[in-house]
Image (cartoon, rainbow, N blue to C red; front, side, top):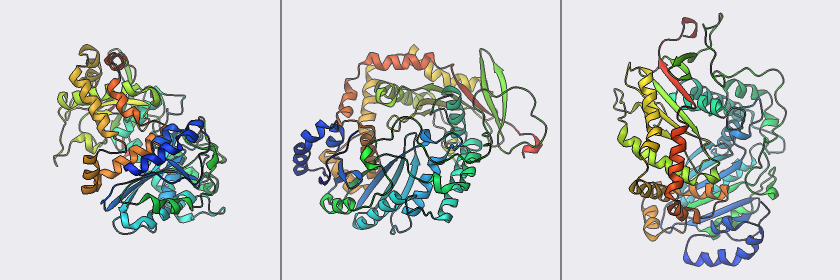
Length: 497
């Protein structure tokens, strides 16, 4: 992607702003940036920014996307992106006013910083953005306390994902089995011991990778007032002129810490059978293997569950070619809601929610590399029937072809979730009256810009041939036996307790 014209105003969603988009189209077309132009993104200083005004709304939602996600972590530093994200979030949140809420999520190819706050606090939002952009680029200095806390938080989240919560644990193992040898064949949230090892070289690790930051805002903020403030932000340390999402391949991030890096708690690939080795056993689930009829799967004994969990993984197409696949997933999601009854705990909370293990897990816009189908069996249930239930959902995609009603419903779900500006009058009024919906809308706008997708993609969903969606469902059924992981209730050996 090439540089965009500097100094152009941010475009809001209203009739008068559409003309500003059209007037810039010739220059942007010449540079291959039609998608960004149609989404309202403009070069402001070192940022690509789009601001959508919702008249009468008392809140505003911001998303700041930075290059370099989990897939870009260097070898031996799985989880570095989470450390960077935590560090920037801490610096950005220091001066936020009452009523503001900031959060961070790391995807495979970028870091998503999100903020909601009163629209009157526009200056605080700009300060938040500036602090995040300057994290790690402050004339060679870092906040040692914030950096140490960023490492500790990232290691804790990664450890919980690998040893505590069934959903992340199973997805992490499945993707390392199914996608071994690729950037996506990694731990879901990083590897705890590798994260802890980063504390010795934070100065180098926190330097930002190359790329152009991307900012989206939707809410009760006048774009013409916000644009000059964003344009004045000192975006130092970013190779802004390279433009767009981070290039393919690993991003250099400083030297790998000296010395061997301990292996993760859940090794990639099937776990060797046999007795547990002598000596101390690390805390957390203990890998074992059981042979099932016609399948060898990786299992883990987990002391905190009363019923088995089974996960089946299917590799997804590349995100830009996954529209039919995403529609097929929505067909499965709707069927799962009818086919499977959730199991509730004593507090009437579904185990799937507490375990962070939805039956169908796939996020197209976020670029997930796999579809995961997870089933939680009843307390003390056998594992084999639980795995069969998970596979039956995928197998049904072939034995019971999608109906026109199911396809229409799938299109409706995705179009509603991915609605982009300019919004219909009813949706604009709804956002002004209920600002809680701003966060999802601004996230979609930002990720569409990050992917370089044109708004027309939303309407194109309705034109996907039914045969293409069915081919995706058929492929899911064919792959249902390729990768299976499970959790079995049990007590680890005494040394692990």
